[in-house]
Amino acid sequence: MNILRKILFPVALVYWIITYIRNFLYDVGLFKSQFYTIPIIAVGNLSVGGTGKTPQIEYLIRLLKDYKIATLSRGYKRESKGFILANENATAKTLGDEPFQFYSKFPEVLVAVDANRKNGISELLKNKPEVILLDDAFQHRKVKAGFYILLTTFNDLFCDDYILPYGNLREPSLGKKRANLIIVTKCPKDLSELAQEKIKEKLKVSIPVYFSTIVYDDYVYSENGKVKISELNEEKVIKDLTEKIKEDQSFSIKFDSLEQISEKIFQVMKEKIK
Image 1 (cartoon, rainbow, N blue to C red):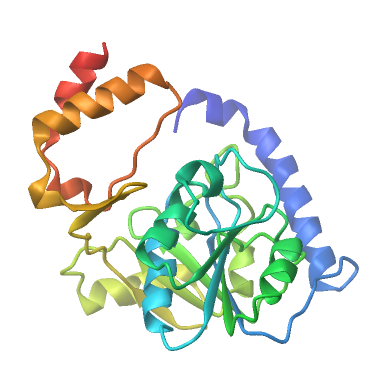
Image 2 (image 1 turned 45 degrees about the horizontal axis):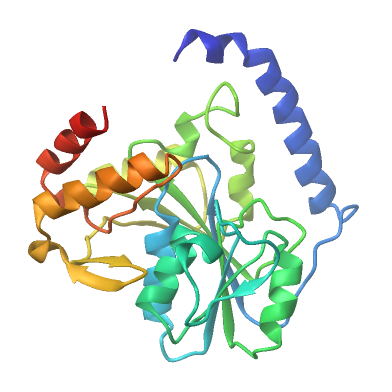
């Protein structure tokens, strides 16, 4: 742990108290949560950083394919404001990277973004979905989902972490009690049953705990469609991406399968950008 984080330990104590009180006030009903009759599944985590929420939402979409599904995300780093429902004119700039990925892969799904989850749900209900999937909504206490899925990564379990800014937790690990099930993500494919049992003991919960691993897609998705990773021309990828990054320093790219793309691409890009 770096020196700055240690220095900020007193700040972490104050933040712990604030988040604890906030959750307590929601738990006892002094702060009100909006309930809904429609099935709503919230996927989230206790920590900052990636725990695999996007693959989990996509898994639920495939699992619930026989229903009219809607997804609601904040739309991180999008250039639009307010409620946006994806259509044929949608781009990563209007939706954000992850929601645009949902829409690109599952055009039959109602994909929406809104930082105000209550308003977003109200707008989605006009389209009569049968189930709503809330992306990264574990801390959105103003909305009461019917089912909460809490994600934590194999290499960074929430029980081994600390509250911000001393650690990476958004709220005390006591927040786990709101979950209906926990999924330990990004596990090795050969994780033994004994290792799984040890993790369950560390988490100290009475709810079901499942373990998942990531299987990468065969395609890269963009606003222009999709292309097989095996068909990517490395030199063209290097040229296009370096030009884009030089043109727009805020540009970010997201592949479904970093492991299947030669590391040479990123090393060469790094040199060219310099």
